[in-house]
Image (cartoon, rainbow over all chains, first blue to last red):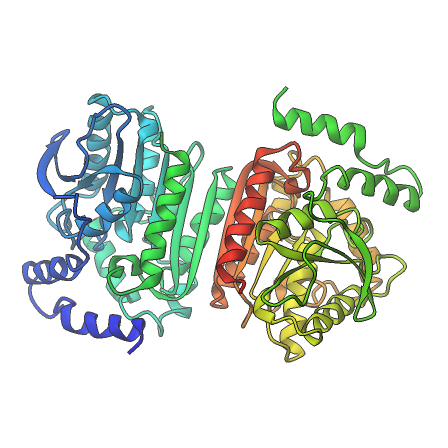
Length: 295
Length: 295
């Protein structure tokens, strides 16, 4: 059995049962994402930062010269938790010996539109107020959390705050209007996401708000002044075009951008780095990239 | 004076005088590109490979386990020579301890359309016939030579020959129809290329042939079966969109692709690596990428 087959078997056994009520789906989703464990020296703990619940792990923040990875997790704004994604976040943080700070932002449908973005900005602002240099902060996120990371960069700029040193986006969901050509061209090879599923999640998140608002679909916003971006995406994703168009938009806005396209990989594949060589390669590549820019 | 200012001064002093006749422009262009010198252990020599003139340098080819970098130079199909680009080619070859084999393909307007592509394929075929393993061969090229490199990959596939291990394209010219939006949006910041200049070069190369033929504009072709591609481009280029669309097309064809966008950099900036930190960074990054795939 090759790695991709092992992954499909893992997903079959450990993926959430989407026929159940939302609380059960969330528990199942957390179980699945938690299969990727943090490095040994990262022990996740609950905390509050700028009034926002977070999970922190690793080297204490605020230490002289200490780096911070601020992480925003995936799950379509509906599923996923800071604790459940601490494995992926801490593994990336570990590559640059950073403290991991993982936002436990409010999820749909309980949260109001903009809540997650406001909370991400409040936590980032608190990091700065706690004396962490912006050049020591890096941002990362996957899927919906990748979109939220890019949205956070716009919020940071619009608030007049200093930018973090760099950001890594993994299979980011950047366009809630679902206008990418890969929504259809990759429908048959994407084993995790569908147009209908994404439309439901967008609807729960937007609550009637216009998906064309850059606060909802950061692909449609201005990337001017953004820090260096690294974007990873698999070719077996209906969200492939979100990454391709994101990289293109960044380039047109004179942003340093590095796009890595991984053939045959599924949506958010680094979340399964315990099974996939390419998942581990993404974590290594993220560390190399972030280490070039973070002080 | 910062590096970009030093580069502009260098170009002002060493760039060819385009008001002169073509032979003089070619001499001036060679003088400019030759300012980047090969590593010490690379001594370029004229040779013939598969009936095609080439310049070779570095570790002898055919040595057990020896790698070969097959390089195709820029110059709009009109200017540039294998000897003149031996500095850039050999510096990239040096990063993976490869022999450099630089195609001295026939230039416009003397050559017929397709001559350069046929010669590139003939030289590649000769490498294979000389016993070099395709997995030990990597291809690289800049500007028009970047487009010719991509075109060569299509020719290799269509000829039923085995693919090289990987390819690196530097500011590649992939679309001779000049349909990229950056042809206009970057016109003011591109100090080297203009739509009119590119149209003249395309015309001399095409000699009435349709620019929409993928043999002329490899962006419009099928990338299926292509080896891993790394693409570098500056944001101050009218050809920016050639790279962005090239990476997008590669991703849609399930090709492993790594795109690196360098803010503020001009067309073909690694050609001026003696002056630019980012130029040297591209050479290092090319080596890291090629080394991952070349046996």
